[in-house]
Image 1: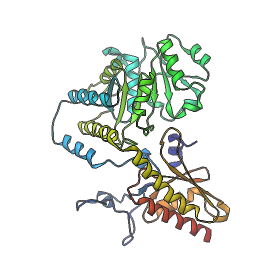
Image 2: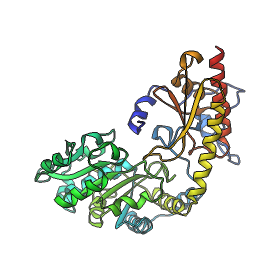
Image 3: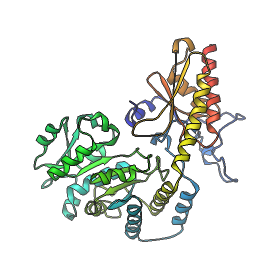
Image 4: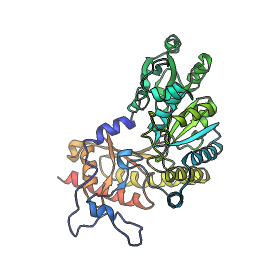
Length: 404
């Protein structure tokens, strides 16, 4: 199964930032759609690409719609008191997603750190200063063994120890006076022996707060309120993935008392574990605009557009002898149509990672990913019409491989 962690492990082996492109070569213009202005990426020798992979941080995730940039630009022209804006934006977002409370954070990992800090310290100012020294605080967080994941450092930043369990009985035996929280990785819901509703029920039974990392789990839109309504005390979402807000923003949703404690652990407060997790006024308004825009979107129409893009790529690839292509939808994270393409690497003398590199190095540059022996194409971060470019380039690369 593909995960964010596996993607990050593989991506280190595939250069995503190319050198300066040769003079006279056609290129994907960094300033596409701009009326004049500086081409900063060209100046810096940084090579933009068509995103045919998905909302991965290393690939700068999503592109923000004009409405979000308008909100960001608006905020950039005014001074406000940051705590007041935090309050008002949090109240508005909470109402929109049917949560008791909400706050904008500097990404989903920041939401996890601040949420964990909130559980540990409450509103005790001395405990907030003391973190990650947990003297006189609870110090353990329970997690299913199958839910260990590559972003849990955001929780361990607060000094806690993760306690692994596998079964319901394991979990109940693991709860002690040291237990601060129970952590759930939403992407691995079906892999664990304790699934979401039972996990929440056990937390309620034992009076232990439950925290769900659902960073990449929008769409579907109703996930924005599904897990808080299910009973999770805290839920984290990324702002720069499916919501298409600022890449450096996220959402923490949940109980009002825990949100108040999280705010005390966050900027503009100093001498806290979250001081470096700053969110500025531009990101706050950008995130509010992103949530509003996402909720107003015609999700059925968008899904049809993604399906159409995926079929364009699938049909072009499948037309080649010996190439198999299928459209699939990941069950949880990145729950949108993707295309999985496989072939006999020995017959075409070309492996999936080599195709990834060829697409990235060619013109226009295209970012994709490989999963075992398959090429996986994500269509939802493309601009309209780019699926035709990706389909043509992919076919060209595979045909050249067969001709070698």
